[in-house]
Image (cartoon, rainbow, N blue to C red; front, side, top):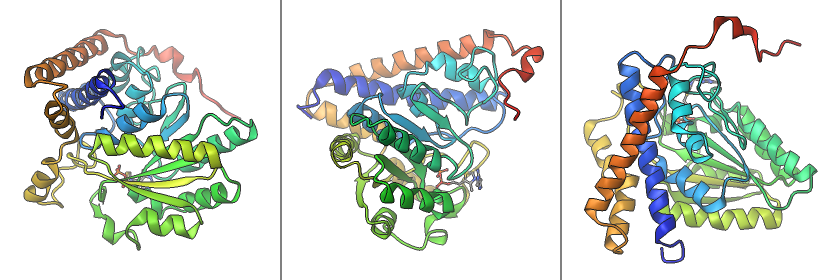
Amino acid sequence: MEEIGKPTLLMQLNQMLLIRNLEIRGEAAYQQGKVGGFYHSYIGQEAIQVGCVAAVGVQHWFTTTYRCHALALLLGVTPNEIMAELYGKVTGNAKGRGGSMHLFADRMLGGLAIVGGHIPIATGAAFSIKYLKRKDIASFCFLGEGAVAQGAFHESLNMAALWSLPCIYVIENNHWGMGTAMERAIAVSPIAEHLANSYGIKSYSVDGMDFFACYALFKEVLGEVLRTSQPLLIEAVTERFRGHSISDPGLYRSKEELQKAMERDPVLLMKAALIENKMLSEEEFEEMDRKQREIVLAAMKFADESPWPDPVALEEGVFAP
Ligand SMILES: Cc1ncc(C[n+]2csc(CCOP(=O)(O)OP(=O)(O)O)c2C)c(N)n1
C-alpha cells in the first residue's frame, strides 16, 4: 500500500466511486425511460479494471464486452460522453449510435456485444504490437467466463501461444452467464488453470474484489508479458451485484447468496483498508462519494439537454463494401 502511495490510492478510490455512481444513475435513467436498448452494470466488479488500468497505464490496447462503461471511463471517456451515449444523444461517445454496449476510446477497441467476438480483435491488436516490434505495450482482453465456451476464445489462445503474442486475457469470472451457472456451461474449474495448460501458457488467479490484489497482479504480469511476449490467462474471481442486464431480476440466485457476495463490496473493502491505514476518514469518503455523484448528475443534465442526432446524418460513418 505504501509503495502505491496515498494520492494514487485516493485517485483510484475516486474512480471506483465514479463508476459506481455512474452505474446507479444510469440504471435510474433507464428506469425512467431515458436510456434505450440494454444496460449491463459493472457494479461489483470495479476492482478488476480499476486495479488493472491503475497498475499498467492507459497506453496499451484494451478490449472488453458489452459491460463496458467502467473501462471507457478509465480510458478517458468523460461521464458526459457516456451518459449522452446512453441517452442516444448526438454528444455521446458514438454520436448516439452505439448505446450502452458500444463505447470506445483511443486505446479501447470496444465495447463489443457478441460474446467472444472481441477476443480475436484483442488478439489482432497483440499481433500488431508484435508486428510493429513494440516492446512497451500489451493487449488486454477482458471477457466473461461465459465466453470461454466459444470457439473464438480457443482459436485466439492457440494463435497467441503459437505466435507468442503479448496478449493478457482476463476472465472476469462472476459465476453466471445470464441465468446459467458456470458449472452448467464450462467443463473445467478453475477455468484459467486448466485452459492455459491446454495451450502451454501461464495462468494466474486473483481475488477480483480486492483492488490491491488486482493492482499487484496486473503490475507483475505486464512486466512478464513485455519481457517474454508470451500471452497469459488471468482468472479474476468476482461477483456481479445486479442481474445480467437491467431487465434480469436475477431469480436464479437466492437473496442470501447475493447478500453474502455483497459483503465483499470492492468499494467498501478498499475504503476499509484506507481507513485502517489512516489514509482516509469516514467523512472524507462521504465527501468523495458526494463529489462523484455530482459529476454524474451533471452528466445526466448534459445528456438531457443535448440534441438528438439529425436523421439526415443516419448514413454517415456507415461502411458498405
Ligand atoms: C454469440 C452470442 N451468443 C449469445 C449472446 C447473448 N448473451 C449476451 S451476454 C451472455 C452471457 C455472457 O456471460 P459472461 O461471458 O459470463 O459475461 P457476463 O455477462 O457475466 O459479464 C449471452 C449468452 C451474445 N450476445 N452473443
